[in-house]
Image 1 (cartoon, helix red, strand yellow):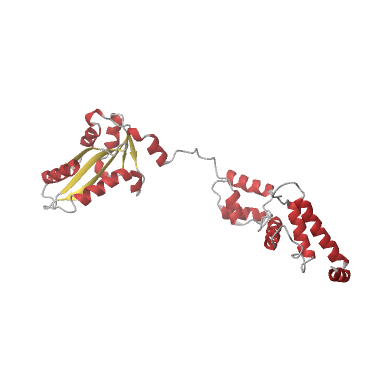
Image 2 (cartoon, helix red, strand yellow):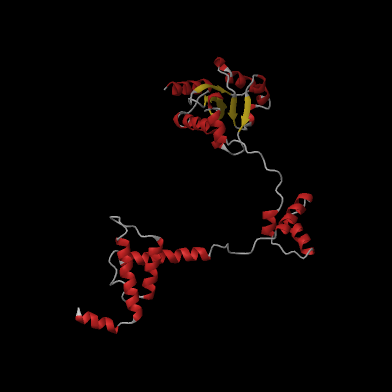
Length: 288
């Protein structure tokens, strides 16, 4: 004790004040009346400040914390500081609202003007604006009404939707046969299929309304084999004809999967002799 007292006499007044502050603060935290007192933000700031002012001996007087905890607080404080410093957006400043309104008005009143034309007219007024800014603030026209997506339509109308598709099969005598079928979306049930050498729209419409189970919508692709009057004949019996987009087989994925199953299981492994032979093969496959 005597040696420590002599050594304390040689220490600076600042070291004694910081040591006294550290010990008193820890005593105050322990006397807050809780079994495990929680430190507040001001306590964390105080210890970060003590570490900065007293880097040589601050760990010797630390009793209720680990030194790594105080170092973590300091790092977190630096992150928050630089987040605050970089809160303003980098890059060029935003355009004046009057210039933005001028760009929108010029593009609205002159709808045939492109970006370069608008930029040239602004340069005549001594207003320098990049093409990117003009494309951002030019008039876009009235907003389109948001429609339901294709997936939402299929889920909402699944009970009244049937899909139709056809594929061709070559016989041993180089005759082209068309296989036309309907499938229900709700149960993935194959309603009807037919094999013919010359498909007609009237025959297909009769098959679409077979057994009194008339659908509300019929989804099909844009193949010319359906015939030019296929859509009008569907409308005459109260079925709405829905054509899939160009080169979008996934829009009619239910029917496309049936086509793949037919091909992989039947025509790709058997040489078809004639129309009767193909009907027998497909009928056996459907029953299986």
